[in-house]
Amino acid sequence: MSLPEDEVVEAQLASNGYKSASLDAALGGSEEGESALVDFIGDEDAAFGLVEDFHALAPMIAELDERDRKIIHWRFVEELTQAQIGERLGVSQMHISRLISRLLARLREGMLSTT
Image 1 (tube, rainbow, N blue to C red):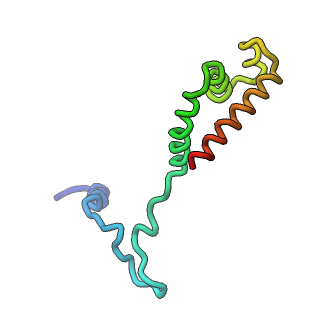
Image 2 (image 1 turned 60 degrees about the vertical axis):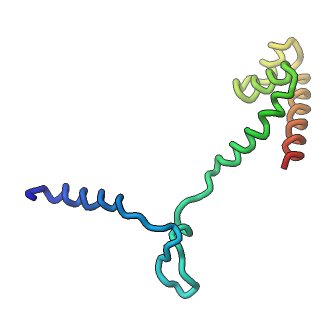
Image 3 (image 1 turned 30 degrees about the vertical axis):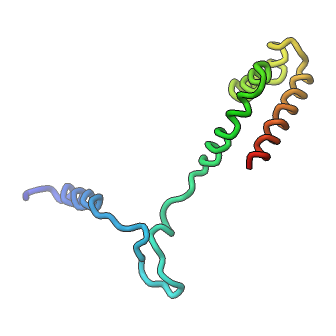
């Protein structure tokens, strides 16, 4: 075919994409039993739990009044300090600290009761 060797090697590697194997296919006999491909590939996505938590939290946050939702948004989305939130609402940083503690306790309790 008059092709350079590196192109032939690349084509051979590319052809492997057309071969499939069952995830349950045995991978050789070990003394402890046969292993399957599925035992060696894939892993649970670490962020999967975060998606579940988000979906569980969303309705609870929606039930909060507007001020509480704003506080949660400012603190955890915009990452404002408690003092900055207090300035926006015209209250002390200590009051915001107490409000956030109560809000988080309420959300945590809601999360625990749904599981």
